[in-house]
Image 1 (cartoon, rainbow, N blue to C red):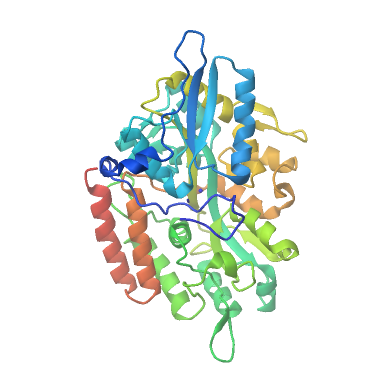
Image 2 (image 1 turned 60 degrees about the horizontal axis):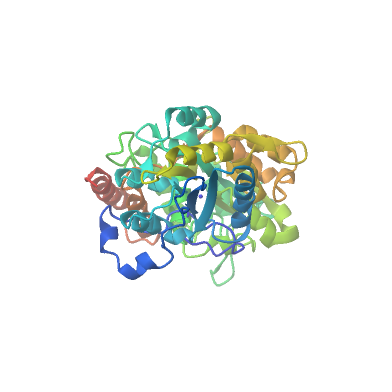
Length: 461
């Protein structure tokens, strides 16, 4: 949902969101010819003779493992039941996906159907890569998906594609570590969060940390920025303003989040240099904020110890507040350069809206069944409840830890996707890390982030 590279889980899990640096609109023109030649050959589109089928190409990051196999199923079904239009998939690793979109577009070799990380949508729209969804498709998307999913797939109020994988953020906690510290359950407020973090932190006699109370981590953009933006949303704040021209990080909500993180690090409850994706499964972190994809990896890694893992909604600054959290996601859209946009949209409608038997009595869209089979979610809450209730997915139906992520679809806030969003996210990460390492104060980090991000999102792309 990035996605910086994850190495914590099985190799076929999707990488975290957000590691590739953003490509400037014209940057691709300066890339070496070798990159254009590597894996970028023009896709076969048939001979062009009357009667030949149209061949649509679909470019995604489902390059290996369970997601590659999961996508193959519906594509093979389509090709077996449609004579006039065929679909051919191609994939690259997530870390190469944005650059590949831009390079192939500049070379006139763009795929018909693209599967971008929604953070990039503003940049891809500004670069003329994504085609707006036709009115009937846009209406279907608005009607069938959660508001967060629709927002992630939209730019400037226009829908550009069908949401696919969606990730919401919640609080993971180790039940055993909380019990050992005399804590009855997960925190509901930030005050309880701090108290629980300090009570669960453990050190040896030399002062070395054995257990972090709360896992802040500089591991990647998804971890560093994702947990911070989730807390910012929970506090009623916003990273980028509604008009997309400035940042709202330097606000009371932003100061509250940065202040909370600063105190946790200063008092030794958080050690940002530790990789939480390894430390939490081994019982070295009591609590951490992350996205729903992690449940599948934790089940696989921890075995019987997974029974110690609980998931709860994000704590709120004050009891009784309005819930909010972060939502990240991907979508399938159609390239402006596609010669067959009508056929491409029809395939996407079939894949993402047409319901079919999904096993054990469940009826759901093919994309929702695909995602649940790989341990993920879509923005169709009705599909998710049907599939999880019927026992679909990688142990998901028996796992109550997925429920908070499903419930969060109703109140999650999509990641901002203005043209400079990827660069803005990287700038925010740099300043968060400077705060955590003591190189900047809360006020300095907020002020510098505001100046840098305002300049990035306000400039002409």
